[in-house]
Image (cartoon, rainbow, N blue to C red; front, side, top):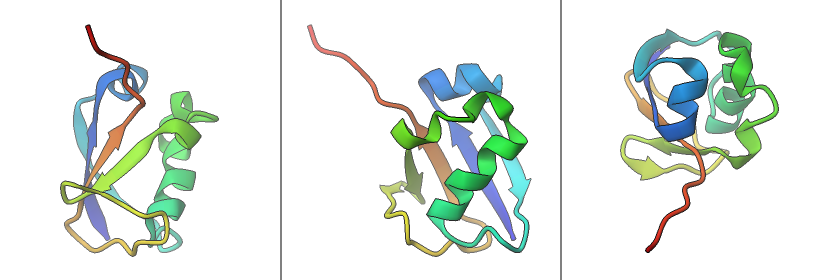
Length: 83
């Protein structure tokens, strides 16, 4: 299965990419398994995925959501803001 990953803010800085296409191994079929797997591709994410939200096709995803070929997954770190 192939997905398109988008990296935002601090995640983008850690992986040094804005986006990429990923061919997922057979074991990666849910949002949770993707979150567990992605640090094996980008070691800088090791230990950081607990605070990263994942959106699937432009909506925040539950960890048990199944992935589909062609999904767009956005990795969004916590953000601070305000004035």
